[in-house]
Length: 265
Ligand SMILES: NC(=O)c1ccc[n+]([C@@H]2O[C@H](COP(=O)([O-])OP(=O)(O)OC[C@H]3O[C@@H](n4cnc5c(N)ncnc54)[C@H](OP(=O)(O)O)[C@@H]3O)[C@@H](O)[C@H]2O)c1
Image (cartoon, rainbow, N blue to C red; front, side, top):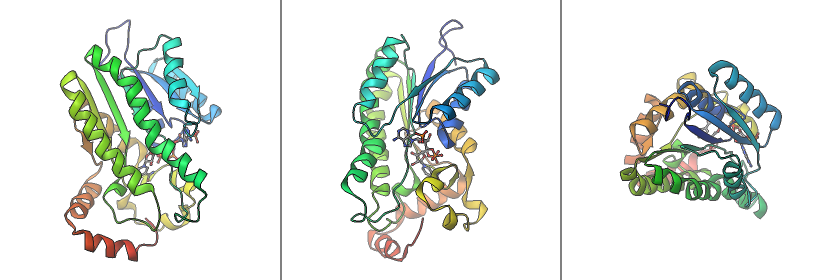
């Protein structure tokens, strides 16, 4: 997997302090990538970095950034340039969901949400993909969700934001794949992580049956394999694959009806 023994490849992962991002950091490091770990919580990132250095002997860099700050993507890119790090793989994983209905949340909360979930993703691709294209090698994973297909939650931007990621990832894969740069929209379903604690829905989702859940490690391994194989969209797990296939065949009137019945996803 390495470029050569002296220059291992490097992956930059946002939201690497927990959950799927942390698991992806381990999978990439296991496959000989050095890692650049980005998130807000320094202590958690340092723990991940130490574990990676110890377990795989790869370099692990920590960068503290809040992706809700519109200046963050450019700062991340400039920092990599200053460190003379060429980024061969990019994982746009940082994310969360708001649990409010649309009009309940203040505008700033929606702005921050779209900045983290969509705008920073597009800008980081725009910043890092040109050098990947020039070198003829790049791997990009953008975290979407089965929510891109599922009935909508009342007023919630999450499904819309993740649909955008699925469409955007396919579009840039079409452009970049001929130049050796693969882009995959990774679309997990319910995954054990801190996601539902942050969202405040842990109580409700913990009642869901175990077969609906995957571990972050399972999702990460499938995501890594999918981008290496060059799949533009990947839904991890048979149950999630079945659900998305059914949902994509439903007429919009049925989806709308189901959306009206929904309380929590
Ligand atoms: N878990 C699920 O059921 C599920 C299902 C489908 C899709 N997903 C998607 O998978 C991705 C990862 O979620 P997860 O389940 O691993 O959740 P998680 O355990 O809560 O991890 C989220 C990560 O995002 C980072 N993050 C959040 N806001 C950030 C910000 N403003 N700036 C920088 N980093 C930020 C967090 O780090 P800090 O708090 O340290 O900043 C953390 O590392 C998300 O895009 C999520 O939408 C999750």
